[in-house]
Image (cartoon, rainbow, N blue to C red; front, side, top):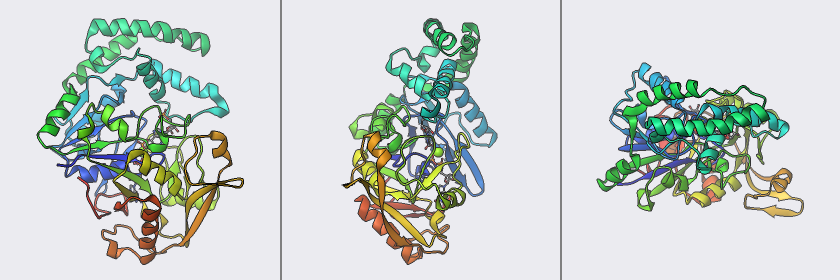
Length: 428
Ligand code: GDP
Ligand code: IMO
Ligand code: MG
């Protein structure tokens, strides 16, 4: 038995979906533990591409139970749309999906507040996905959130919705000059969602406890990434949830015995979408090359992703804050044509040399990456499935990353498809 957390070790979009799909073959249960439909996880099997936002990437494997845990914020319309999208593709969801009764719901006022907050921030915006994620988590922490189990109790739902609307309509109309939201519209719309989702709602913490006790393999799927984590990330340019390994426990409702290993997913370079510090960002032609070669456009919003060199300071930080037991390097093939590849090993701020990621935004604005240069391999690694088949320069690059990260590289991804992968150790 082995239970594995798979999480992003940079700023999201590292290729978590591909690796979760791949390793789901050896799992019995796959759990999403945080975030919401701000995530976009792309899975490619043969020539068929599937983009998942809320449902775990294990859903493409028949017979695996997929769980949306209590740490996830659920937009019921987005979830129902995703179920319909999968079923249209012939992927069975009924009987293979459970949603935690404790999961908080994204309400229409969360979306409205998210968008208004962003537009009022102007230059200082975070660059959120506009899906209502932050305001929903804020309500959860303020203890005024509405959970899936609350939606299923009509009177309680009506009471909580009325209380919240009183508050949010005041903010929307007085602060943002927006029309007030109508109780009846939301009440009726959400009652219908509740009716359609009822079959999936369960005590998923209990389900997981039973699965773990029976010796089943559980795979925990993180969304976003370590540097977007609300505690560990580049605050305030983060998402509002706990993407790191700690979130896998609270977000699934399991204790410390529920996890054995943590696999951090890192691209062979770095990307970020939205605003905020990004020390190795390349604003010139190499950045554009990475965006083109890596097809770096957001799966959720379509925004171009900011691109830069691999940052070993970030990587080491992710290894430490998650106690990673393995690293998966994705998109190695994107570097195939480059004559020279750089790795950031530290930051310079004036006369000071930093080896740890600073918390201070002022410092982060001033950091200059210190680079090490390595020769590129300039031949195709697409689809390579073994270390021996990799060009020598690619092996040297990976060995240097491993040395800098101080964590074993257990998987290398060489293309978007399931089988375009070199697996050293499966970890589940
Ligand atoms: P996630 O949010 O971490 O699941 O990552 P995304 O799905 O948002 O972004 C990763 C993108 O890279 C997707 O389009 C994947 O199909 C693609 N991808 C994943 N691994 C590889 C790889 O090794 N090589 C290439 N070229 N593309 C990959
Ligand atoms: P996956 O799971 C990359 C970013 C947004 C913004 C910040 C806050 O596909 O890796 P939010 O809407 O969450 O309040 O936005 O977080 N962001 C992501 N960036 N990948 C994601 O998910 C992201 N989810 C949110 O761009 O900068
Ligand atoms: Mg993504």
